[in-house]
Amino acid sequence: YWHHGVKLYSSDDLYNWKDEGFAVRESNDEKNPFHPANIMDRPHILFNEKTGLYVLWAKTTAKWDFGIATFSICVGKDLHDMQFLREITPTPYHAGDFDLFEADGKAYVVFENPHTEMICAELTDDYTNLTGVYSSHLPQKCPPFVREAPAVFVRNGKRYVLTSGTTGYYPNPSEIARMDSIHGEWTNLGDPCINDVHRNSFHAQFSSVFKHPFVEDLYIALGDRW
Image (cartoon, rainbow, N blue to C red; front, side, top):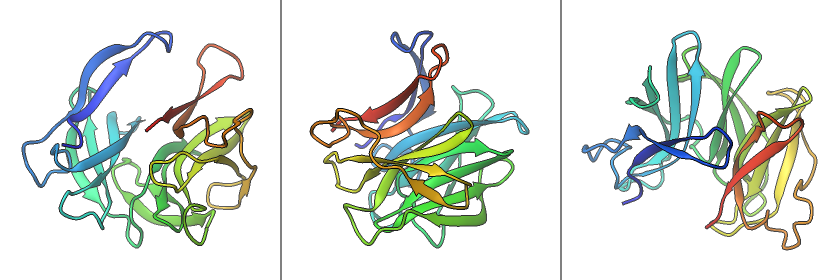
C-alpha cells in the first residue's frame, strides 16, 4: 500500500503538533485515486473565498498505469470532510511534482512536465479545474538538470520558486528562481542553501516554503528526507 489517505495536523507554535484526523480518507474503490494501492502524494490545499470550499489537489497515479500521472481534486466545506471530485490530466502535459498558489486574484498550479520543464497553469474560479492557460519555464534537456518539486513563496513583494533537480530519491542542490511575472520570465538565482557542504540541500527535497507568522522576515522551507 502507498498511503492511507491525507492526514491533518495543527500547531500553535510550529513545534508541538496535534493530530486532527483525516482530510481525505482512503477509498474502498480500486479505481479511486485515494484507494491505498494507488500512488498519491504531495497534497496541497487552498481555500476558495467565492465558493466557501476548501480545495485539495494531489498528484496521483493508478498502480496499473505508471505512465499517466494526474491531478486528483477533493472539495469540502470542512477540512475534516473533503470528498473526491475528479481527476485531471493536464493535457498536453503530465502531472509531476507541483505546488498551488494564489496571486493577483487568481490561483495557479505549477508543476514539472516530467523530464522536460516547469509548467505554470491557471485554475478556474472555483479552483477545481484548469482554464487551459499555460506557460513554460526553466526548460532543460534531461535529468538531473530538469527541475521538479516546486515551492512558491513571496518575500518583499516579489515571488520566488524553489526547485529540486531530478535525481530520483537521491537529494541534490536546490535552485531558486524569481518570477518577474507569473507567465513571463523566471530568473534563476542559483542555490539558496548556505553552508550546504554536501551540496544536497541538507539531504532533503523541499516541497513548501512559508513565512513565519510571528517572526519578521523569517521563512521556513519544509522538506522530506528519504
